Image 1: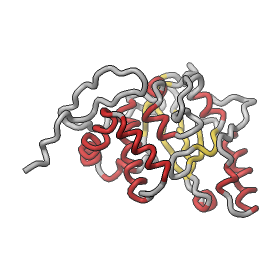
Image 2: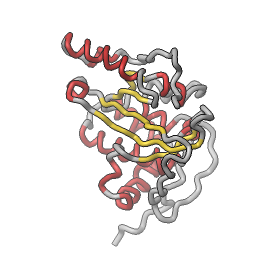
Image 3: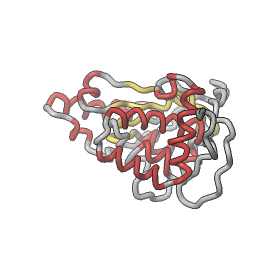
Image 4: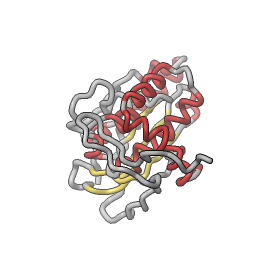
Length: 238
C-alpha cells in the first residue's frame, strides 16, 4: 500500500544543491532527490534550522490542502509547521505531547549549538511572541524532558500518531526515521522519513508524560496552542 502519488515529482522548495560545495556532492544530491521520490513514505531533507530542502510526493500528500501561512508551510520549515501552522493538528495527532514538545526539545538543543544562527533566533522570537508557546518552552519543556529522559531530544525511532488524509492509511502511527549519511552530513542535511504503519500493524504508543498541573489554554485563533504547561512553577524553588 502506497500513499505516494505515482506520477508526482519531488518538490524542491529549496535548491538542495545550494548545500553542495563541489560537483560530486551536487551530483549526489540530484540522485538522492530521485531516491526520495521512490519511497512510499513521507520523506524530506532538512538542515539544522529545519528549513526544508526537498520533499517527496508522499510528504506533499500528507500535508495537502494546508491553508497559506507566511512562515510555517509544509515545504518551508518543518519546525515552524509543527509549532505554528493552524492546520498541523489535523495531521499530527496528539500534537502537543507527541509532536510539539519533542520538537521544542530538539530546537532548544540546536539553539545551544547554533546560538547566533539568524533563523533559529527568529524562531525563538516567534515562540516568545506567543505567550502559551513561550510558557511551554520555558516552563513546560524542562519538566517534560525530565519526565521523558535523555531520549527526549532524539526523535529517531520515535512512534508518533498521525491522521493521514488518504483513507487507506487514515488514523494510524508512524515511526520517525532520521538518517544522515556522510555526504548529507557534509552538506548540512538530514533525512527524516515518517514510516507509516498499516491499520493494526503497530499499536499506538503510550502517551509521553506531560508536566503536572497541566492547565487548559484559552481558545485562540491562528497558531495552535499548547496546554501542557504549568500555570506557575514552584516545584524547583526552595
